[in-house]
Length: 400
Image (cartoon, rainbow, N blue to C red):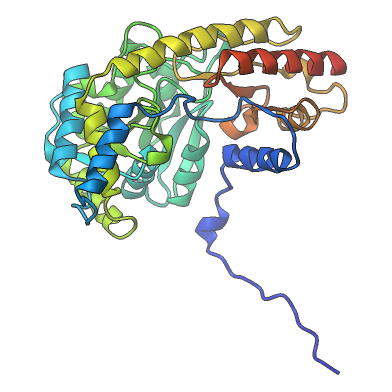
């Protein structure tokens, strides 16, 4: 008689068990299953522009291929790219970063992962305002740090102040993470609040990492980078990305601006993981940063129109409230009036049923640290926004 076989036991590291699969990626996977079954979905879940990459950027990548620019480059990116990043930031925000204070990475998320990895150690605390982008919490935990959450006030459009941050500081605080414009709420911090937080941190020897992935999608008319607070530069890390600014999500090109010793440490880590960003993409990135910026403003203006469309539509649904996002391309409606109705126990339940029953994709607020919201991306066409809103109205009416 053959011996019984058993499933081998896999022993995974404690650090990988500390984190979860990205909630946004989980939503994408569930939606893909429905699509494969023939479902007609309206996708408000995607965190990427609906625009195509501008032609001059694509042509630069094609030229790089034709010119055989396909070898390894320096780990932190070519001198040409790092200089282009510094010059673009200087032109737009009046900063003065040198080449050795710039690193190019495989997307903005990679830069965030590297920065947290070289700054946060076991036992360190990281202050994280709520709502937060899904990956911040898990990257901090993977590094061995402890997230310390600071709840923002929805009634004040998710405003974050220095006083709120100061109350959360302890002797173990190592890093404060800022994200303005914010994913998922679209909130934009004032220049005064950002400056006060950075100077408070600087005085106490605490680092600030400012994720400015959406900095060019600011609808207030007062675009601002934390990098402008140059007198606190030694405790400041700016993370940027070409993904949203130039509709280049799949190209995977991000960067960080930071003190040279931190950039050097990030390069060391990157040298043992991905090495350099893709050579061809680096050439495309130079074209994006040094070419005409008209495409950036054109996309920004279109997002304002789409934002107004979806927010007004969401506010027309009885019981749903929604703050006006001042940046990024997300609306973050409060759906708490429907939790507890029709068997819905949570925002996650609601988002799941919205997908299965109305075929509208949205991300539940639990992914961002709140229990009463769903995130709806308006990076899509007006036609799709109208289709999605109509389906949502019918869905909410059915469980009212």
